[in-house]
Image (tube, rainbow, N blue to C red):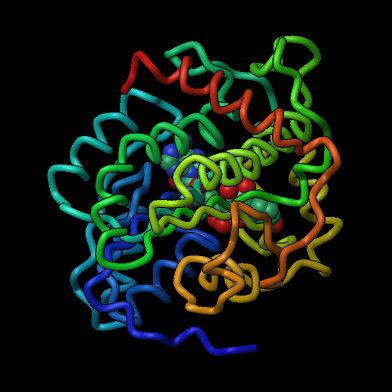
Length: 291
Ligand SMILES: NC(=O)c1ccc[n+]([C@@H]2O[C@H](COP(=O)([O-])OP(=O)(O)OC[C@H]3O[C@@H](n4cnc5c(N)ncnc54)[C@H](OP(=O)(O)O)[C@@H]3O)[C@@H](O)[C@H]2O)c1
């Protein structure tokens, strides 16, 4: 497997969920290779610790921390405005933050928490940061990477009940949100692909990260049962880093596709182009008040 060690000096990488798990691992890798890494974290304390850790380990002190709870579209919108003010161009946006939620809750803006945290926030952030990505794409390749999951196979979307008002189940909410990541990556590529921007999504594998402890009893139980079979954070972040930084033709020609272990892999039959287009349109309507 080719080593991911190309120099990333001069490039700006924005990573959500950067204080922990594969987001932290990828951020550390980008910084070690000279990139300016912008960490998006919901906790200032955890974000400060992650930034200090990255600086200490890599010697790269160009990193910046922005604190935002991405379950709030208002906060995502303000975050995007600030990033647009602070960075003329953004080379790579990694929509990685995510959670599974043991019971159905709604945010103060009225969205089901998993739906907004794992999907709508990344959709809005990408949409608002597009001018900075387009600016980067005039002098090189710009990329958007979505952290999806094999869990996307779990069930098709129900456009009549995107907020899972009827019969909420943790794995259904999580799986559908990960399906949305895959579909958004593909639809984004279809819409902006001719702009020297590559959009892709990936499954990291079952990875030993804290996410398994945060998703309620079911996620915790599954986490305990499959713990011996999980892969390390380093392995889990490999395809992420490859898609976000490699010159390999496969990652560059991602074509909005979905990857696992640096290979394009089959997606669920219910991950259709029609649903990708419809989800885009519905999401655009939902985020409109926050643009
Ligand atoms: N681990 C796996 O086996 C696995 C498998 C498939 C897909 N994934 C996906 O991989 C991605 C990263 O997860 P991980 O496994 O690395 O777990 P993790 O260590 O728990 O990382 C998740 C990150 O998202 C952040 N986050 C969650 N909700 C947020 C919010 N409302 N606002 C801002 N940040 C928020 C977390 O912040 P806090 O630290 O403050 O909670 C954390 O930084 C997720 O999208 C997950 O769905 C993971």
